[in-house]
Image (cartoon, rainbow, N blue to C red):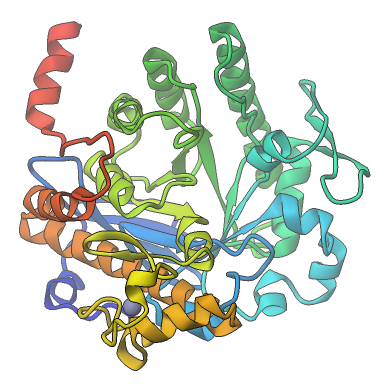
Length: 422
Ligand SMILES: [Zn+2]
């Protein structure tokens, strides 16, 4: 299922890893294949029982066991190697028993590649009407029908095992920001204790019963020292990967960049790092530059359904009148079906007439765009041109947006600054 095609990637295939995590040798392995010299960009490869994931990777989101509007074959054709589903949503509807009876999540939704399931911590704290946190877990009211539910670190592991997830996430205590520093400390420490319980719960599972592996989640709000301490604590835990949570929640981009710079240097080099809920084209470059290997976000498909398409020149609104007579592809360089078989004028027409095909083609295009961005990132990391390629992409992509800009980090400058502080 090798979907990568470039020469640079092909030559990586037989490269000896410079670091590897093989704690779960038969179920999961991460090979670190190359590191950029100027930034923290990394090129790696995840081995799961359901296939290989070339990293850095973007994971399309299938919250309700579907990547909205797309057939699994279409998702695969965009270059997606792994997808994300959400334990909270699937627990409420259709329910864990139904998915178990269907033969697991892969069979139920017709996706045979790796699936990462989010624990639902974020959804409990953002969607559920009333939630009550105790040391035991969190009790909340379903946003669908008002029923009461409880999630504990152990029940969330059970749930994801029932689904047959390949990569499971721990239950964490997510806080809305702004919050008091003491509340952030409290939630962060509770998340660590909950991770210890999740690890113990997974230890009870007999070998051969499941091939699922567990990632821990690092939190700490926008407090650099809390982020750093929690990263150091997570680094000592018996998990196969480290996620960074609680970012991209409305903070300015330079703040997210600073938080990552206070996090990733303290995470184990040999384990994959996953930045949760981040997936705008510019944030992918910024995240990789700061040592991230995996991303997920609803943005590409949600934006697509709102007629917003990614191009190298930034996001365009295909429903705008300026596209009415654009008898050319949305993006001349894109190899997706929207761009190779149809014109921008046709897509404009589909959105103006609210035709369903428009949503599908736009979703396919945006996912393909991000997959091509990730390919460019992987190739540039290997050939030593990551920082230049990132600057070139961002200059062009952001030119029209007027966003607060973030530049490529320079690891030698930052390392010197870090030493000076201590
Ligand atoms: Zn396209």
